[in-house]
Length: 442
Ligand SMILES: Nc1ncnc2c1ncn2[C@@H]1O[C@H](COP(=O)(O)OP(=O)(O)OP(=O)(O)O)[C@@H](O)[C@H]1O
Ligand SMILES: [Mg+2]
View 1 (tube, protein in one colour):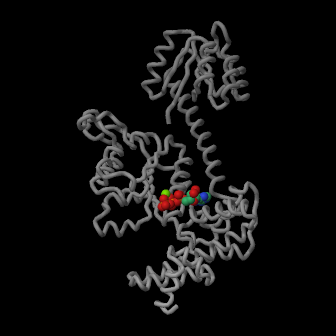
View 2 (cartoon, helix red, strand yellow; view 1 turned 120 degrees about the vertical axis):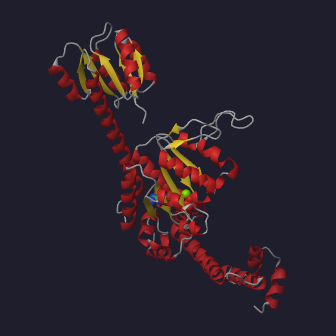
View 3 (tube, protein in one colour; view 1 turned 180 degrees about the horizontal axis):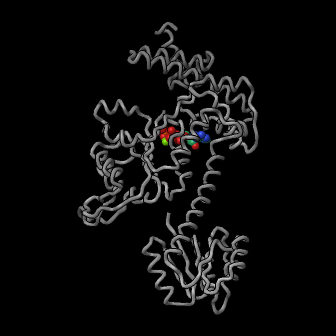
């Protein structure tokens, strides 16, 4: 986290000394010599902390403090005073106008202590706010055991900086969980990289950046690691990362330093890494497609997100949460619909559930059919398709003629024997369909 400070004092010597000192300690310090300038500046830019001289020519420090607090209540103010009036200071602290006060001449050690204390408070406040938001996102009124498990993992993972690995089928919520961990961690930027979308030839440059002149015409470019400095780097579909880059990634994670393409300098980065994949990594390791050492390094905090069909308790809760999100009010489903949802296999997991609810919202507002009817008929149709798909998967290879026959049978069952509709859906003419029915003895 960046730490921004504003120092207001009419003593110019003091300002330049303190600015130099605080900047050397990692604070981004701005100084102004008049309270009026301070007020103007404060209206344009926010500061985490303001150090105020108590006695200034055109405006008293206490008065300025109150004005600043009116503009931004989250800013912490520390008063610097040569004539401490302890009673008054305590009163101001109690009122919440100032966070603390320091006596002039200032001892640098005292100043540092006070600042680190105040910044810790700010960090805690930020984390509390983020946590409250995070809780609202996942946990509805009565979370299931499994959602609780997810949330517990998110809480633990957000408190430490070790890498996180999320595995699970598509649409189970891996990206969503990565986002929650980041939000709750209070870290700065969240940088999402989809490893499957980056061509191998530019992978290294994308991740680690490029130094000017690395190749003809190359200009300096920061990579994702640098962009995520102070924040979280989410490497999605990590199994798609080319092997040579995996070696470089391992090095970066271990040393927290990177080197841009064509660069000599080592650039320190403070990055929290989260990776995700829907592929079985251990099998990829056996096939030599994923580095085992990298796997062990990334696998420190591992969470496997179960497919929706294995946590049927979540289906109802999530469905109601999505219904409320789309309709903007509580919508109740019939028992029959909930049962159909629990019986369905959800190959697309939470994403599929969310999309179905969205579809039911659009269709019900445009067609007048009830949400129950729409969901129910969608699920019955989808269920049929997946049964056929699963059969095909089990048997692997099928003769084309057999596939064709099944497709025709399936279409006829979906359209309840209506041949012209079935032909249309199959993309063939009615006469072709009739001919094929004869051929296959249907
Ligand atoms: N616990 C949850 N509460 C509410 N919405 C969720 C939850 N988990 C996932 N979602 C929603 O479900 C959808 C799919 O989730 P997400 O994109 O995170 O899946 P994924 O596992 O990353 O999928 P893929 O492997 O395809 O990248 C998103 O719209 C997400 O917002
Ligand atoms: Mg994802």
